[in-house]
Image (cartoon, rainbow, N blue to C red; front, side):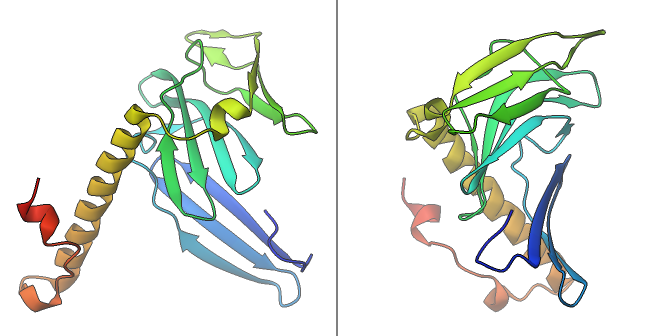
Length: 183
């Protein structure tokens, strides 16, 4: 991923299981910088997804977990906004260990090969990029709201852990008092 006009600075993203990592490399001074990226809860136990990078997004297709569970799910990570989305639309069949390629005109994504159960899959799926760039459906909005709530809970737990045994209520960040009292 390149940002700006400096060809000497590079960014790489790593997603595997519950680890998300942004790695920045500066060729001029030969330095690395590492930043943690939160992984959405539905992607955490998983690996072996096909992916593409288009504009400021990364699309991840299918996946596998450690217990031989394949998935038809498609997720999107917005690099610019640091936001995850799980799409309501899925792949036609569960798939892992596939490769994804975007066409030169960025109109279509080709998902090739993979593994299903105990066998290699010789498959070619073609999907239009517009399917993954339109607005959120109601189900996707609901997933995003639940994911935001989980993120908030995780942040509170980190704050509490950092306080140790003596919890100072004045140090807790208040997100929104209305969210606790109003429905």
